[in-house]
Image: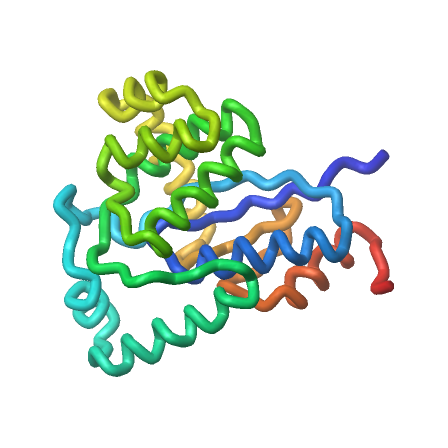
Length: 215
């Protein structure tokens, strides 16, 4: 049997388009029946963000030069994209640091791909649907435990520097290869799909790689 299609999903927990892209990708996997293996890779949109975080509107207006009205239109567009994919965007008041979330995701990947995927979904929901601080250790431990990861081990990782070098090395790997925005979805380490694309775009990529044909 051929090996599964490797998918490296480079993303940040704080990226709303990453939530859209992941859910669209997974819908495409279901509709095509493609055999895949997903690896979640780290990228930080705001690596210098303080532990206290920052007001979301103030941060996004300053970073992207948008007016509050433009920002609200963008938010509405993202909500509209997420809804048919089953992802609900709620009010989010603050931007938070996500480095520790990436450390837990790295650990979850070592524990098994399904645990990493479950943690990724739980973190995206906590951040974008529930407005939680995914930089807070108590929040991260609770989320990790809820998806079946060991809470004591999660806290020990967070209270140490474990996996910090691994995460930074992976971040450098992708930025040095030209990844400057996320989501960046890399198929079999050779084909890149950028952004929170519609389901059909991911279906096309999967069919090309797996040899599947539309029904």
